[in-house]
Image (cartoon, rainbow, N blue to C red; front, side, top):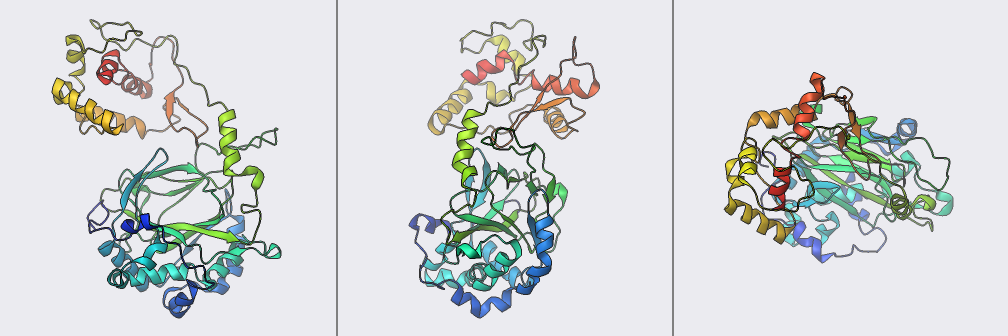
Length: 436
């Protein structure tokens, strides 16, 4: 697999995603095959659930466990090689995530015979994950199903895919609560020969809940910072129960440019219960409804903040003029690369934005010191920078200046941050440039 990128070979799984072929609904259709080869894959003993259960139940901020050496290392290496050699992911990017993802692994059954042969070990792993034995192990470990109500994890509803997080990829805070999902899991296929480190990013972050509001109908919000961060270590599998309004988690942005964060992730769905989530009053729908009623944390810039507009440039903040003046160009030329101030370039950018509703500007800032200054401030201690965190984090995620020091930002740790936050990034010349 090329460094920092998913494999470039022709997509086999993603091309099948549109077919949406339903898995066989015959009982045992998936796990009869895996029972033949499960012993070749499974390294964790199904009887281990008894001594692992207390660890799972006691974990904070909500019950979870990171199982280690779940599968035989040689077999899992073979799966990893198959994935790298035969699969590629399509970029999926929304307001909550950026990740390369294959099609759903349930569609392995509708590939051609040749493709199924090339992905045979991956298919065996998928069948093992949804086998009778492994699902029973997870039920015993987590206690996620109410046997008295006839609940059990569904072996026919296979819901998983391969996810590749390269540099810059991330997944923001959410609780996974959709439909009949009961357990979430991530099986990591990262480089087995080079341990993943904190500096690589991509950790699974788990968030605790804040204090319960007096109004019982109002849902509790997650705390702004995670209390647990789990490294995506090779041959580990993280499992937790989907709990609406509780199981908040995120994937930290990946920093490594050398190695991708490769995993198989998905859900086990519950079967046999009329109350699919077990927490109907706090379903995802109700969360969305509460979000509309709940105001976001207000924030206002200090009234005494300095005017970021340089001398010689109009200071009328209500002006709707879109022409870029000579003084604007002269000022912006100190910060932006010259090609971005040329009329032809601006026209090309505008056309692309109108066509695609987005545009990515490469090497936008002129000098490396400005970029480095931004990175230094962004990575600094949040307590030293006198910042204000926008909340709740499942709706907005940003850090803003919150303290105006009278006649200016006098502290050394804050003056640089203020200079970046305003000139050149919030000036009237740049606003006019954006309008063009």
